[in-house]
Structure formats: structure tokens, C-alpha cells
Length: 132
Image (cartoon, rainbow, N blue to C red; front, side, top):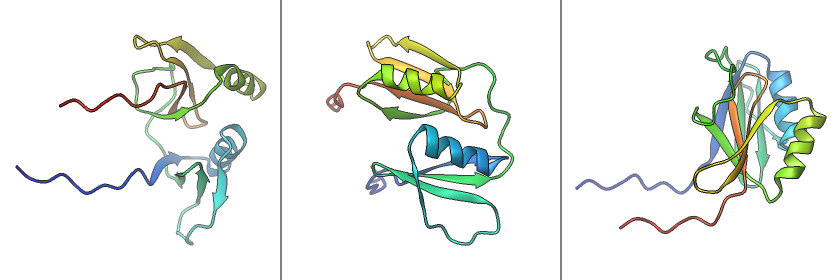
């Protein structure tokens, strides 16, 4: 059997946007990411950082996102300790969201960034054991 790739961890997530300024403001002001220095690419964007994760904002017309908030769609997921704080922050920013408790008993909130990318916030238990 072939060996698996020797991955060390998740380095960054890239999100495309038609409006880099709006996306940068969203990830900075709503989710608390801080700007990093970025190479002088030939397209607008930003590199942002928080708690060991980078988000790369890339100016490019994204696929048609948005629409209904769908917990089963591709999404970024962030862990928190208090969903009431998240709910209050989203309300302050005027961001619509869907709140639920999934079949595993995990409380979650789903919403969109300015380009329609789905974001999940949840209170997650410790990582379960690996399957043998």
C-alpha cells in the first residue's frame, strides 16, 4: 500500500471575492483575523491570521454563492466556547444566520461571508478516537 502524504497541518484557507475590501473587513471585524504582510501579487487581496490559521483573500469572481444558508454546503468551521456571544456579534453586524444542534449534539451557527461562502461556528467536543 502507498504511503499517505506527510501533512503537518492546515496552513491556510483561500476564499475568492469580487470585493476584497468587503471580505477583508468581514474577516477582520467580524471574525477577528489580523492582516499579515503579503507578496505584491498582480491581483488584490490579503493574508489574514488568527490562532494559527491563515485566510487568504483572493480577488476573483467566485462561483455563485449565497442563497439559502445550508449546513451541508462546503464551509469553514471555527470553534468557540460561547454561541451566545457569536449570536450577539452577528446580530450587531446585521448578519443573518441559522442556529441548530446537530445529530451529534453539537450546537452550531451557520452564516455567509460577503461573497456567500458558508461559515460554521460551533462548540465542539474533543476529537474522538481514530477508527481502527
